[in-house]
Length: 591
Image 1 (cartoon, rainbow, N blue to C red):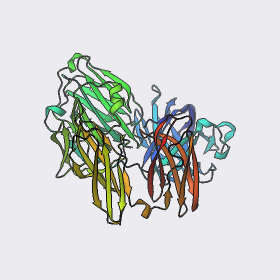
Image 2 (cartoon, rainbow, N blue to C red):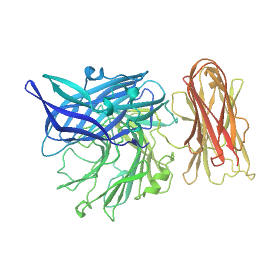
Image 3 (spheres, one colour):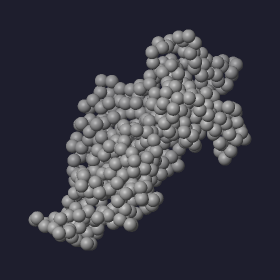
Image 4 (cartoon, rainbow, N blue to C red):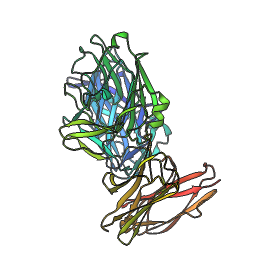
């Protein structure tokens, strides 16, 4: 999920407190050039907005930033990061009280005294961490200000046009930053959670996961964090005098960075996009031995390359750690999903194609896959073309339900409740490339686990029908899906089917009419109590194509029309979500 970037805003002005007196430096101005805002964040999970700029002038001073955010956004912290400073900004109620907020919003002001040298105008980044408590579409705004001395006292003065103190009077679109807060989309698979409490994983001493600059390789993973300044994947000791082939880290600015060293000099990639925003990002590092060049891809796009001198050619790793360096002095605060090692230098197109597709471990050129779906007794297993390989986990990292946006390719699969029995069935027409079927099961907050493994019949009649049953207790919602693994390692999933959802939900979602449809169709639903409703349409790859409803509604019957004349034909899904849960149904657009 790439962060949105917006145009230049002037936000800070600096003054200098010197031994009981406050002296104004008119040239000490901080310009904010870019604001990095995630497009979608998850309710009750911390996310980060990054504000970039630079200090112009010299001396020290007080910097201030005024924020206008929804009341449901809790400001957790504000940190300034510069080349020679990392400081926590303090809240100033006095400055914030000078501004009037829109209904349902609040105003924060954060300030601190900072010193910068005269010779180097310092680039700065302010990291604002929020935790949203409600879902919906929201807007954050910023205004600029100046602190000046009047009669020996410090006065805050707005530097925005017309000296705006009421946020309702601000209509400039380059100051409004949309943030959409959604419920977590749990895909039923597992993720590894490292809390920074000396938790890390050690890779086995195996050729398959060795980082060796005498051969091609690619390492990729999904990662989510709002922390900064720690290693993700590292072969580095706690010094730069020892040669090491790779460290992928989150820098103090919240960017992904590649480091390596030949024992005499350290080489590192340039700045990359801000990714420590609390959202999932796909990171891939590929290395080509012939050109001695690293390529860093973020969210399927090449963001930087790092060309190395011949002195790096013979450098190999002594050990490889996930979440720490070899000296165990820094520890990651992040979640990981789908850690993959490839034995080739993969290009941007290959990385982009596979990045959001859940893999099986049997894909061509894939050395090892760690999916983080299971683990016990300090070991997390991986799949190396069917062979087992395990990571050693230290200090009890947790396996949690993943919300990474892994794409699930859909199969025809049905499940319905007959009395207290769940009946699941599917049919196939060609099983020549099918290795195994797995019926998977999970609870509302749990990870998918294999309920039943079915070998393909491969009978003379190519059309086959399968039936699997399960007992339902009637006390909780249970989700089922079908997982098909082919002989070449490709994995296909069905849409997940909830059983018992209607018994606890506060709504009834009907089938769209007509279905199939050509230009438009109507979706009807009934609410049994007042609640916030989201009704969203997705295409087959999981991309959102239309938001039909996003508001709080009273009990009653509703009908919404979905206009699709400009969309390509094919299968679509519509998902309705309230505070009690969600339900997804499918429809077919025929042109």
